[in-house]
Structures are given as C-alpha cells and as structure tokens.
Length: 82
Image (cartoon, rainbow, N blue to C red):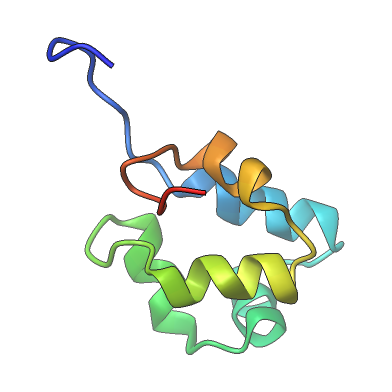
C-alpha cells in the first residue's frame, strides 16, 4: 500500500453482514448473538470504539465468518494480519 492510499475504516458493513447472515432483527439482537453489551455495537457503529481482536474472534467463532470475510469489511491495518 502506498503512502497516499488510505484504508477506510467502517465497521457498519461487518455489523450489517452479521445481522443479515444470521437473520437478526437489529443491533440489540446482534449484541445478544455475539454476547456483548448493546452499547458496544452502538459505539462501533459511531466510531467511538474500534473493532478489537476479541470482537473479530467472536465474529469468526460465533458469527461463522472467516478472517478474510471480516477483512473484506474492515481491511488491514484495522484487523490483525493473517
């Protein structure tokens, strides 16, 4: 990646994909599904809380997503290297 390229951080695509993939109704249902407090999802959506490694692991384990799928929504350097 060149110095001029900027990687856009937007976790909303990932959160929306999890909701869609698992037939959840809303962010509150997603929070219950991933087993985090509802404000965590809200803070991620509003860019006040970055996606942490533990959330990525939960997406992989509970959400049945591969690291490549997570990285498609939130690319490196925001998600750890494979």
